[in-house]
Image (tube, one colour):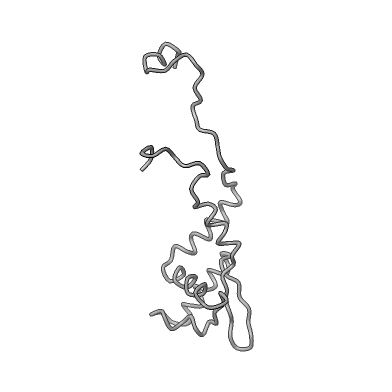
Length: 129
C-alpha cells in the first residue's frame, strides 16, 4: 500500500507499526506438544473429575480405593484414566502396600495456568469481546 493510499484511509505520513509488540514468549514446538498432551488428557470428563477429586483430598493425595466410588465406571476404567493422567504428567503416584496413592503435580498445573492467563497488559475496553 502506498503512502497516498494510506492518506485516503485516514492515516498520516508517519510510520505506523502493523502489529502490537509481544508481551511474552510464545510457545515453542516442544512445549506445545507437552501442553497439548495435558489438555487432551483433561478433555475427558472422567479424567477432569478425577484430577479435581484427587486435588480435593486433604494433603492433595488420594488412595485409588477412594477414587472408584464417585464414578459410574468400572475399576479398570478408573485405572486407565489415572494412567492417562499420570502419563500426561498431571499426577504422580506411589504404591504403598496393596494401594496406589495419587497426587496432583503443581508444576504441571502451573504450566497450564500460565498459558491460559490473560496478557500482562489489558486490552482496551470494548476492543475485544
